[in-house]
Length: 241
Image 1 (tube, rainbow, N blue to C red):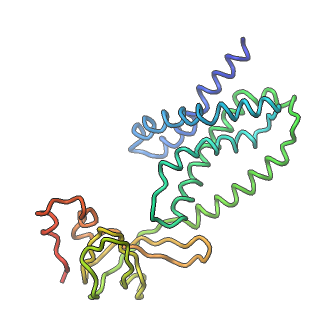
Image 2 (cartoon, helix red, strand yellow):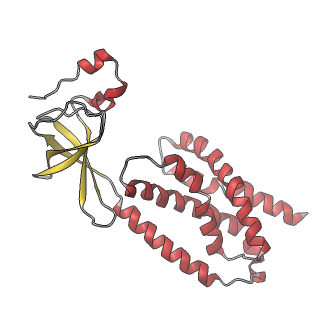
Image 3 (cartoon, rainbow, N blue to C red):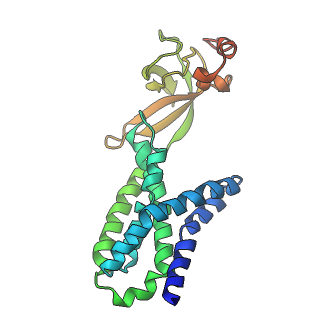
């Protein structure tokens, strides 16, 4: 009976620990992050965490690396929620790396609260799990750093281009003191001779810089063109000069 209480306490506490940490680092949206993140964390613990724990218990696996990896796996449902279509793969992999780390913290917290006490009965060495943690952690760290997104100032040029395209297109702009090609997402107006905010990231394998038009400082609502009223759309000029 006491053992069941300890296990229930671990399941009750562990999922919320990484969410609490994330909330504290997300000021001023602390409460909102917690209110959204906590139910999601508990749902993931029920859907994936409990079956994983039963699997580990069956084979008497009580090493912390396995529970950290299990916690990372619990983040998979959230990854699918945040996965976006038609964006560079590095965006989605970076989201996975961040969420996997949060899940791993929860998995380790669960191990510390309960299975750690059974570690002396462990039949499976920590070494394979530790190697997996190092390998997967290294890959995800690489992806996270590579997928870092930066925002820089740029300027559109006077080039022939549809004002609003129905598809993602590529156009020439000025950024970082040179002329570069940049993505114009579908539905985002291309306004000539305008100051713009440009998103920069690197491709996953080639490390080549990729640029994308993000925002017109003089017309912040322009990137929401498709959702604006006809009157608001007509109010957005096609050029800045």
